[in-house]
Image (cartoon, rainbow, N blue to C red; front, side, top):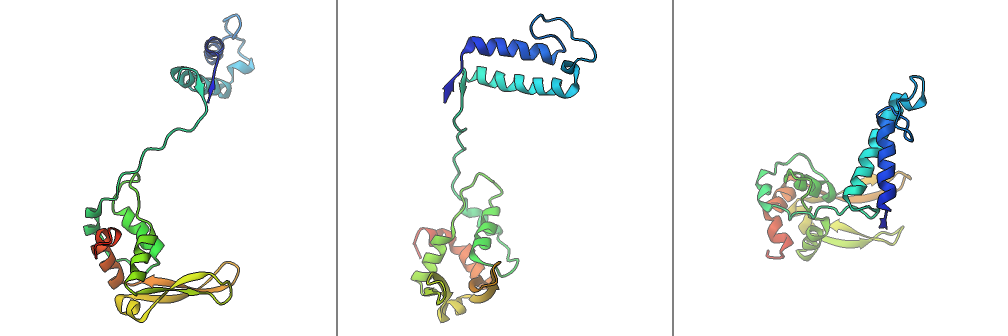
Length: 187
């Protein structure tokens, strides 16, 4: 952050205010009708600059740094009672839907990892190595299929085929009903 010279700031604010009021910034006399300083766009711009300089003044002349983001509030698990199945989907979209039930953009969502890790511990998912890329990706097991998971083929933007785990109504309803226990490893 940078400290601004407060005396220079005061002079700049005075000049900006004069221009915004349609006056010559140096001698404070009205400017001619055809002066660029009488242009409505210039006047609006000067009022904006005045607001910015006022904010700098109110911040004791400090400029820079980032505004701190408000801290996220914990996920309200009670909102999950409002869950309604829409359609089969991937885990990422499903978790976003659940976060949307909170009706608060300042809520910390629950990532996909706690759920997929739980599904792996329970034997519903396993990691399989892709034969082309060598990367690990989750795949539904027989137990997972019984749970309501299934594999769906997709095509990437570059034309490559890949598999994604889809979550049926049965799987989504179970996860929504038990998400707090899943996250807390209590089931």
